[in-house]
Image 1 (cartoon, rainbow, N blue to C red):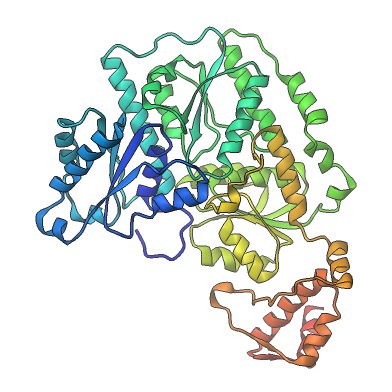
Image 2 (cartoon, rainbow, N blue to C red):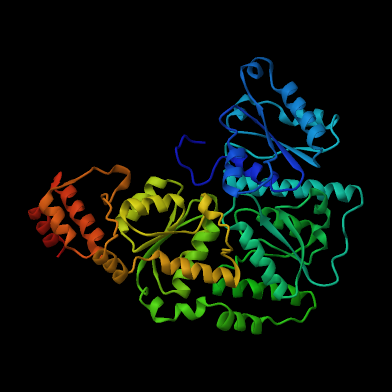
Length: 507
């Protein structure tokens, strides 16, 4: 737990609420003080959904601090049970209310005697895990609760479907391009003649969870949410799972081959190599485009990649294996996933960065001065300050990451979208030069090579005129080098003499 004005992954209760509000007819009670109850606003604003967010705050105020929370929490659970008639009520504290050290499980047990719906306390340590880890654990807990209940009532499905079927685990609220990704994944599986058994948690009813065991296997498109559930189903019901994210041509093919292997081990003789070949050569445009003269101009360009484990690793592979772009460093803010991430990208970049410190990331970007950044919304802001283009490839999300048009990142259509994103993210020299000639070029003030401790340097009028004569596609780099030289020599004003001295120092 730490005080911060920016976090890549939010507090644990946000993860729990993202999962509970993704299910159909599940209501969440958040035991929290005013100020922690921003989830409703965040979801309704970003997701562009027409329904109300099924989350109620049981506010911790001075009366609660004086008398205790039990009466108020139980009353709120009972009230929502009568008003909404949900299948499940999930109770979650926040980091702040957890300080009270109340026996919330006892509250849940008491409320259960008065409600028709099931009541569950989110089993999450709010001081030790972040939003992603809490979401992963909450999904596993809900699945486990209903499968155990079905087993006890002898209503669990014990026979699998006659034809190959799959559960997609990891469709949930406030995720990066998630709705489009799941649609593309469904289309891919349909092409392979694999029936969709269940998609969880988005839009699913908890009453459907007993049917999970009918599927032949599970697929987890994102490492951050779904792996714990897949591991639980594998351990208790011997259901294999695919955890290869089908992002980019190469990894999509690897995902399909893993599906093929699972089906063949179940005595189903399938071969998807012809499908992979046709999709790669004729249907998807990204494989052809990566060999075109346009993309060859990007070969050797420097890029950095940062985001969650899934998207950052996948993007690094696409840039190096499919586009021939030099990834100087790749990083993730999922510190708990360090060993997997290092194993996946270790040989594809010069350095691997594992941190959730956005100031450190900003300084590393300024130091490297890449041609392009692929990161989160925070890296997009850093890129604006440095005049370096940025393609957003990962959460944390912004309303821009919930486009109304179809823009998946997964599958063969997703590979096309990513190829466009990569190419359009680069500032091409001739394009920049033409913009300058015909007007409309937006010159920005460029900060020094340490954004977390920047000191503004003044340019005099003669130096500014000289800088304006330099072509736009190299102007930013020259300005940064000059300011760096001035800073190293403790100069607060850039003159013509300082510019020439900086040039000589670089040469």
